[in-house]
Amino acid sequence: MTEPGKPVNRGNNLDPWYHHYAQRTSGLSASEVRALFAVASRPEVVSLAGGMPFVSALPKELIATALDRVMSEQGAVALQYGSGQGIPALREQILEVMALEGISASADDVVVTTGSQHALELFSKLFLDPGDVVLAEGPSYVTAMVVFRSFQAEVDHVPMDEHGLIPEALREHIRRVKAAGRTIKFLYTVPTFHNPAGVTLTWERRLEILEIARDNDILVLEDNPYGLLYFDERPPAALRSVEQEGVVYLGTFSKTLAPGFRVGWALAPHAIREKLILANEAAVLSPSSFTQLVISQYLDEADWKGQTDIFRGVYRERKEAMLSALGEYLPELKWTNPTGGFYVWLTLPDYLVSKAMLPRAVKELVAYTPGTAFYADGSGRHNIRLAFCYPTPENIRVGIRRLAAVINGEMDLLDTFAGTGSLDAVRLDRNSAGLPSDLP
Image 1 (spheres, helix red, strand yellow):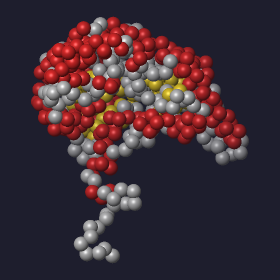
Image 2: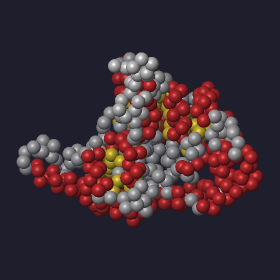
Image 3: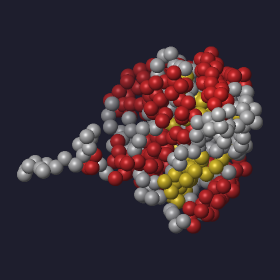
Image 4: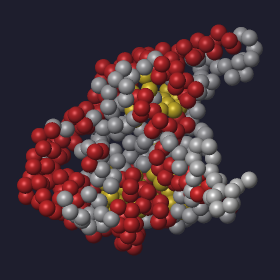
């Protein structure tokens, strides 16, 4: 019974406002990556989990000089509200950055955002209705899926292999989704140094995928945080370099400068750009003038291309350390060999489950991200994403050795109990485990 005049509490024991939330909040959940950060930040743990740039490779004096110049010469502007589209000077400089990816564009079509993650959220807000379908690689960037689900969309994963998204699989998924009467709003892709798989879409496939998208009237959202961080040869030019009207391109300074500035951008066709500006103003009024001006000053005075070369060398050394350690400690397994970016995608024998092993790994003082974090449908149980960007080469080696101890311990445990009969159906010979050529 409720006393007259008293409000009815329709919540639950933990949250009295549970039933007041908008329906779309049911799609909000903490990613497995986020949950790992608290553990991985402990100094005794070697974290191969988070894709944190090695910002210590950025000389502090470069940023200090830019900060000093901004405050001494443009302090009043830096501390004031700005344009919802972003500072014109920085947008012009962003064109120089994108030109290295083969992109020719106008500064008028660039919208500066609070990191490219913000651009992804704004774009999704503009396009997604409940029940819409987003096509994405399988696996796909974990937080993108969180964003899509927050707008009550469903992610349909298209298979990929060592050459990136498979065009024929894309055709088949489009046919299947359309036959079911579902609405495909866009294709989300990280074609260059993919997160989490580390692979790069070939030039031939880029052209074919753009043709498929045009034929089916599907917009492409190209997310490219890592494109300038190649190790030896430049990757193929961006999808946006070929297709202007059918591709929205997302970029960021988080990987080639520092994530703490929270400055990214979207390059979009004119009509979409106008709506992105309105959405940006509705969300944050204006991106930070201060951080934009600091980055603009850095790009104007520092040898930013030379600094990007330094980052490439740092990450190349770390990748080589990781692959060397994997070859020594886990030679029976399979992994990708990225030519840039931050990540290696490890495939376990299909009788091991990466998420189930994680507590033991943390106990052994190594952290990784289970493959299930990168799928919306529970796939990836036998995969692990390993990030080589942040730990030193020495710590990477230590981390892989600890990880190998965990994996081998799980294998030995299964070997021990397989003779009882209960595990015979799932047990495979460790030396002949089925490892498909395509990524699951």
